[in-house]
Length: 49
Image (cartoon, rainbow, N blue to C red):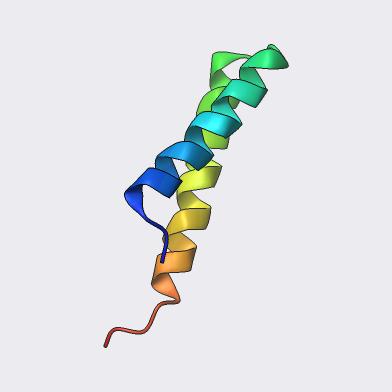
């Protein structure tokens, strides 16, 4: 399971690399949503035990 710290690190690393590429705010928001969607999918697959 991904810890909160790992989620933050993944997000920060992704955002910093995207900023270096000088993308627009709209694209940044889209990438953030994609990251959150991927994380949500991982949690959906976990057993409910």
